[in-house]
Image (cartoon, rainbow, N blue to C red; front, side, top):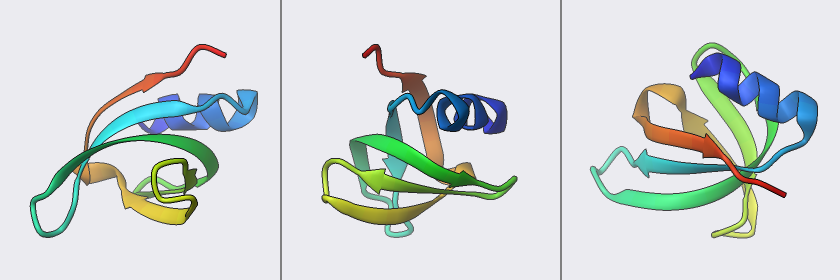
Length: 67
């Protein structure tokens, strides 16, 4: 999944994710990736309209969004 986020960062392509929060709540979000590490993704969340940090281990699925 790390490589997928790197590719979206390079191509400036949004990505749709299913994410589980620390509390166990599951949300669907569309992100614009800003930074990727082996553990975390920093991205602008189009749901919350702000920059967020996501733990890669808590991302249940991810798919690039066609532009």
